[in-house]
Length: 345
Image (cartoon, rainbow, N blue to C red):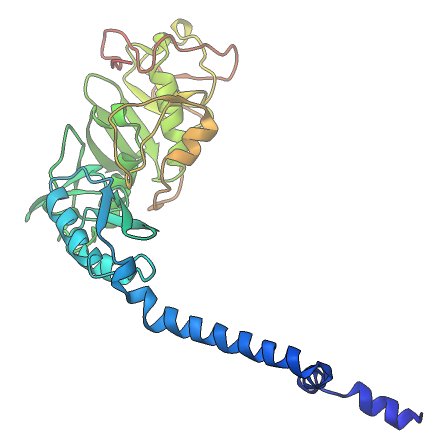
């Protein structure tokens, strides 16, 4: 066999090789193969053009979970109406999203069809993190600055001042968005104790606690670590009577308003109260978690200015908290008299 013949055989296309393989089959096997191909095409056509939109698999039961807001009844009705026009083999997720587009409390939908007649929809809601106050009025907002018009606020949330117009879907004021991010990163029990959040020229974002010290955050960044450090310091009995806690360096929070000799050093950013993401349902209960868990539980925020860390406390009476001799907190958020932070476990 010549080299040219060998090269020509090597250049045979896969399609031609498959055709040759079929021709080598016996007539009986070829007929069976053709019958199988035809049957597969018929089944595929029947699925696409009949079964998946057939009443045999129509959605008859819609299970909706995750609704807690005042719009829960209307959101449930809108989703049920949209889902009843679908089948479990043909779920139109875009139609479900359009059905709840007019409800700002809905963050996203998690849809799971259950063959043959049930559709499960879990609604992930935004949770109000703060009240945005402007000259035109006030509205609740989520931690990412999303405006939640018509959503009722359960319990206490801090206020954030807005410079200029509020906006339509989200806050236009970048400073107000940073304040909402600080509020949204707070553990549930601490968020209920924040009176307001403001941005000062020298200290950055500052949260004023009810019956407690001011929390100085600096820039609206690294909020997971800063809130973990805040909860750690406020839970320490030795921090009672403090007037402020500087969290700009979260690994070394500084407590002000106490004599240096009266303060036992607190370990940096240890176990802290559990945090509640602003985009999920808030149970109102904070659990003790490790720093890694707290770091992943609180949503990221939008930095609005640069960090200005300073290891030197702003006042002469400030006692920086060092990492020596860790002290286990007796009860989460326990503090004493004299202006210190107080909260139930």
